[in-house]
Image (cartoon, rainbow, N blue to C red):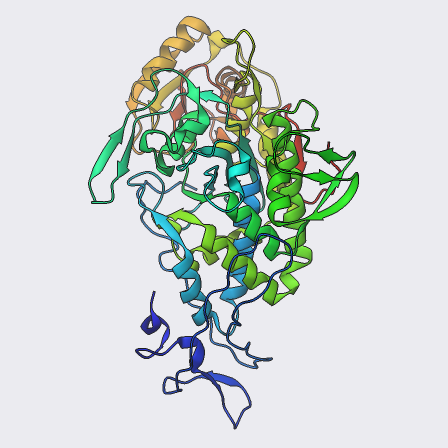
Length: 564
């Protein structure tokens, strides 16, 4: 975006065009105001004190009228995909920068800051993966990738000094609910063994190259950086693991942690017992109780394993979650009240930020941040993907998804089910729908149902027909072909006098109460119910209804709990 976009004249910084109207005393935008020298960008910081090398333009004092900030270009619309139907250390970087951008978006000199922040943001063309739109109707999934590249002052102390491209060291799937009432952050362990698919990457000359995937299960962190894999490869890998569409990615490196934690004035952490890195090279030494850390200490804390329960990556992830929650609380309770500090956060975050083109501007990030800002901290759940030791290793050093609990987590995300309490009115509506499943069940042999494919994978109706007749004892079932139109959700239409059959079929199919669509007129003769398999149907025998609970350790962003 340029000055002309926001009313600036050629060669004139829009921020310098705000002048005082002597008649009203208010600041107003004047296109003929003289230009003044533009300040230089602030330098980064690796420790808590921050010296400002050049001041930003003077803030507009107590405006009585204010021009609105520029709106995000293309906040809704067609994307690369069909629209949806209706180390934790990196989340804190994005969240901090996003909240800062919201403040900037409502400030008087937004024109200056939008241009300045736009110049900070790096973008990557990831081809046809993800979405071109900032937001789609419904849930949004954002992948936060922590790149462990060692480039930068002091970063060579954190391991392999030859690592100049980095890997997906800390990766978090940030799921924002469709109604923006809650969010779930799932950390994906870097040592998770998984299949990495072939991925098409864009080259600097505009051409494309297909990077071969893994032949055998491989560590997840190799989904980025290895053999030229870009963030789009990591997105595709996560989609294969979770069966969710990932809309966007944001990537940060070690330097981002140091600069952002400094920009907010340090982050409070609480330890049950002291932590001292005896041999890791970070010199981290924290006492029991509360400490405020930033810069190099913050990065050391987030990278540290020494002194933790099993000194494992999973232990480290748990500490990172507590750091993220503390950062979120600080941004809401403290930093938001300091415009200068928030601008520092926005500046630090965007300088360290690499994103896909769908969100590759300050205006688009503001739009996204405003949606995130609607969520109460108590409704943001943080967890680690449920895993077990790799059974193929005599002495396990890697992990694989938990065979029972991981699919439950994925199902809840796929169905946009909150891990926190739902609103009372929503719960009342759900309870009313759930009542349809209460009552007697017919025998499987008495269930009459016609099957139609309404957006499920090809051959699904035939597969379900065979499964019902041969495995579940439902002989009075038939395949009627394709439904008149595709639907997002599977539905079962039935007459009032078929309610017992509907409940029995729902039990067999694993249908949620929301799938049941009772009619008002009784069926006659051999009239059958109608089951339309929607886009949410995956395969015969796999329940469609999400689980009611999962046995996974969780925390909330509003909880202030000491770790270790």
